[in-house]
Length: 378
Image (tube, rainbow, N blue to C red; front, side):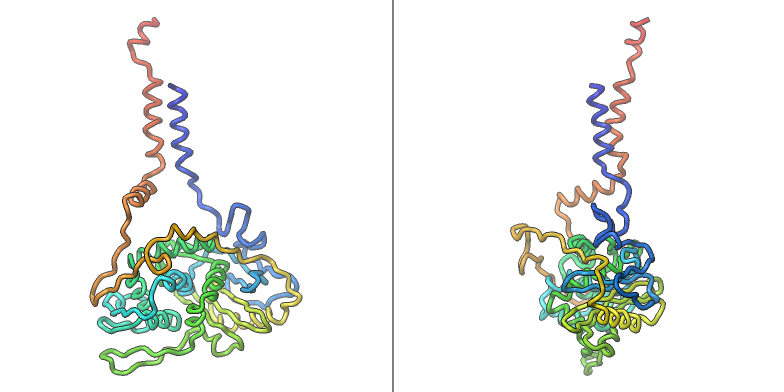
C-alpha cells in the first residue's frame, strides 16, 4: 500500500507537466528553421554582406524555395504592431463571405489606435472592411470583422493562436487581433515571414496586400473618401507586392514586404526599427536580388504542420463555423465552450500542487501509525 501511494504522488507531480516555457524559436531539434536561426542580435548571411539596417531583427527569404537568405535575431520575441494583422487575415479570410453586409457599431468606432473610419449605423461589406484593414491598418475594421465572425474577438484570438501553431510560428502569442501593444503579445521576424508566405499563397490576401487605393463611405452616405495603402514600398519599388506595415510607441516600426523580380519572389520582415523602414526594406530586397546567384541559404522557412483530416472539420462552408451577422449596437459575442472544453479550461487554471496534494496527504496519514499500535510494541 505504501508503494502504491508513493506512486500516486509521483504520478500527480509528473503528470502536471513541465513548468518552464519553451525558448524562443526552439523546436524539438533546435532552433526552428536551422541552427543559425536564433534570437541573437547577429547578422547572418553567406555569400555577400547585406546592407546595414536599423531594425533590431529582420529576415529576408525566398517565398518559392523557403530559403532564408539573410537574418538578424530572427527568433527574437518582439511586439509586432499591425504586422500581426497578417495572421488576423489568415484566420478571417477563409471564414467570412466577402459580400456579407456588416453594420458599423459604436464598439467598432470607439476602438483605439489607427482607424479607417467605421461609423455606427453605416453599412459596409466584408470585402470593404478587409480593404480598410490592409490599406489603412484600421483597427475599427478589424474589430468589425472579428465581431461579425462566430465568437467575436475572443474566438478570433483563440483561432489566431491555433493558426500560429499550425504554421509552426512558435514565437507568436496573440492577445489582441489588431496588433496593439497588449500584455503578452509578441511575434518574431521569422514568424512574420511564415505569415507572409501563407498569406501570399491566397489570391484574396495577395490582392488586398497589393491594392494601392480604395474608397470608404462618408457619414450620412455623402459620397466617399479615398484611402491609400500605408505600405510605401508599393509606390516606390519595382515589383513590390505590398503586404503590411505597423507602428506603435513600444513596437516602433515593423514591416512585412515582398517583391517579385527575375522569377524570384522575396519577402523582407523587420521589427523594432526607429525610422527609415521603407528605405531599409528596399535596400535589403535590392541586395538580395542583386546577389541572389551567390547567396547560400542560412536557414529555411519551416513548412506548416500537417492539416487535420477533413472528417474532423465542423460547420459549413468548407469546415468553417457559420458567421453571425450583427445588428447595429449589438455587442460582440463570446465563444461558447462545450462541457469538455470547459472542464479542460478549468483544469489548466488549477495550480499544480492541488493535483499532488491528495495523494501526498494520504501517504502521510498512512505512514503515521496509530498510538495503540505503538503502545503494544513497548
